[in-house]
Each structure stands twice: as structure tokens, then as C-alpha cells.
Length: 520
Image (cartoon, rainbow, N blue to C red):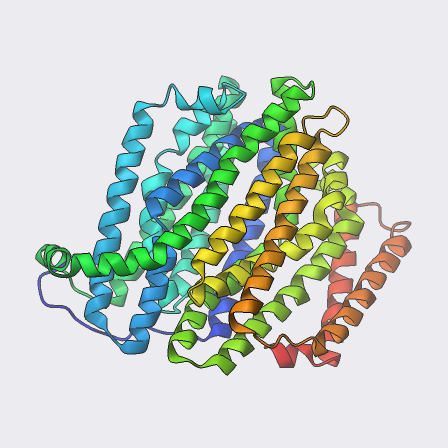
């Protein structure tokens, strides 16, 4: 925030097109995903699946608390900033930001202090492994950091100005990688639980660096010069009305985040206790959970850097177009995002299915993780569409629909895991079934809700060309692997060669079918 003496100054903030903003976010997210993936490999070598499981156990409950303290304000701020851009109401924008910072700052600080007071009670109630107390304690400072960052990100997203968030993400992941390697190495002699806490501390440091970048970028925009008096005046004079506006948008979205976050909290509890019921020890249950969440999920969710980038840029665009009643352009943007998502995510899902065991053996020295990937990738292939569909629904004011859809999907998933994974004959396969059910159900519900809300004309004409290109690419990849396997002994070189050549062939097909030109 920029607190200064003087009146409100209004300047233009750079607005980036849907494509340009998406490309900026996608490049940054790709880099962040790559660094995060390398970080995961480093952690897997240092901590193993059991240590990864300990580190991952604290994440869901922290995510829930961040959802509570953030109060869905990132999306609300993005929406209201986009609406204010359409009406050019700068004064209202300043009021919205003042109230948002006050709400999220107060909630996050109070929550963090409360957790510190209850630190010796919460982990024992929630986690099967008592060593999780170290990671839980270490992650508490991240709550106010992420809460404030979310408001600033919402502001930039609403302005459709994606560069600050992209740069912050790049720097965050780079710092986290370096600190993780140094800190975990140093703490390993003190025990696996303490070393896992070191990995969490590196994440907190990375988030703090990211917040610093966003604050600097916000100051440089110089859209406002605030006195502290102005903030108090805004709250007293217009606080009630603008708080209502924020809650109107934030509350349904908060409910959706709370559903997902609460499901995330229950997931490790239900999984580990189901494994214990099935006859596994606490250490083995933690190790299996770490294998699933630390080895399998990072590979399955590789394409989400594209879907998140598209969705982050799509939401304010859809909100703006919907407010202006420009429905044809809105339909065009929706179709564009869906087609680009399929264009990128389906090929990755096929590549992962055919070469899953090779990848996990190389990266994690675990063939078992690859077998789990093969059991879930086709259902998660549908879920790649869930993120952009959810963004569109929120953009057109259907946050409550997103809440109900996510609630149904999460409930169905957790119930199946609870009853199936506890069977000794099922174990981790029961978890896979439950996760698959939740992802497929959530995507289908979102798609049906969107079609019912706007009746947008989805274009299937180009899908057939895309399907042909994908089949040809998959055939090329399999043929290359079978041919080169006898000549290349290094697994990294072999898979990289197959991926590079088949991806190049796929790009040529997309160009030949004019799919690039139509979508981009």
C-alpha cells in the first residue's frame, strides 16, 4: 500500500489483453511449476515419502484457515475492480481496497495468534502422526502473508495487469528452491519431522518475498495516494455499503473455497485413518499419503499452470463483458479457453499414461507412483476443465452454484474414500476411486450449470481436428519410444527426446489444421 500525504491521484494502469495476460501468466506459471517440480524432486530425495507426508499434512488445514481469513476477497476484489473499470469509478475502488485490507488483515492476525495459543492441542486431534506438530507450527506465519497477497493479486487481476503477480511467483519459487535445499540439509540430523518443518519454513519465506514484490508493484502503479485519514474516512462514510458489495461477491466464493479447503483438511485425516483401519502402521500410512500427494499429484497437475493462468485472466474479462452485456465476445472467450485447455491438457494426460512408470522411476525412484498415476489420469483429464469452468461461473455471478457443485463433489469423494479405502483389499485404490469420482462429478456439474446459465454455443467443429492431431501425436510418441529404447540407455535423454519430437510433430499438426490461428 502507498500511504502518503495528499489527495487521491488517479492514473492509468496498464491493461493487458486476454491473450497477452494469459501468456504472461502461463510463462511465469510454467517456470514456477518447473521450479516447484524440481523442489519436489529435491525433497523426495532428502525426505522420502514419509517426510513428504509429514510436510503435506499441515497444508490442508492451513489452506482452510487461509480461506477463512481471506474471506474470498481475492475474487471479490478482482470482480469489483473489473466492474469499476467499466464504470471508471475510482473512488469506489479505493474504498473497496481499504475495507478489504482491514478485513483480511484483522482476520489473519487474530487467527494466527489463536493457533499459536492452541498449538499443542490441534495437531494431536487432527493427525495420526504426532510429528506433524513441527510442520503445523512452522506454517502458521504464512496465513497473514497470503491473506494480504491475495488482495493485491485480486487488484492486479481485476485490472487485467498480470505482470506483477507473474514476477512475484517466479521469485517466490526460486527463493523457495534455494532455501529448501539449504535448510532441509541443515535440519535433517535433528529428525525427519524437524526437517519437514524446514521445507515448510522455506515456503513461508518464498511467500514473504512474493508479498514484498506485490507491495512494490502496487506502489509503483501510483493509482492512489492515501493518507491514513482517508482510509478511516472511507470506512466511516461508505464502509457499510462497500462491505455489503464485497460480501455479496465474496461470501458465495468463500463458501466454495471453504468447501474445498475443508475437504482438503478431511482428506489426510480420512486417508490416514482409513489406512490404519485397513491394518497399516502410522508410519506406513504417512508414507503412503506422501507417495500419493507428494509424488503422484505433482505430475498429474502439471497442466494446471495453463488452466490457472487462463482462469485468472478469464474471470475479470468475463465479469467485464457480462456487465457490458457483450455476450458474443463472452461466448468467444469461453470457447477459446475450453479449446486451449483441451489442446494442452489431453496430450499431457496421454503422455503421462503411457510413460508414468518411467517418469516416476527416474524422478522419485518409485515405480508404484507411476502405477497410481495410470489409474487416475483419465478421470483427472476431465478435471482440467473444472478450473476455467468455475472461473466463468463466478464471473457471471454464479458463485453460489460453484459452492453447491463443489460441496456435492467433495462429499461424494470423501464418503467413497472413507468406506472403500478402509477395506484391506482396497487401501490406496479406494483413495484413487474417491478422488476420481470427485473430479469427474465436479467437472460435469460445472459444465451443466454453465450451459444452463448462459446457453453458450460450444463449438465441436474444431474438436475433431484436435482429436486427430492428438491421436497422431500419441502414436508418434509410442513409436519413437519403442524405436529409441534400444539405442538410448539414459532414461532422461530417452523421455526428453520422445517428448520433444512428439510435441514438435503435434505443433506442426495444429498449425496444419489451423487450430493455432483460430484459437490464438
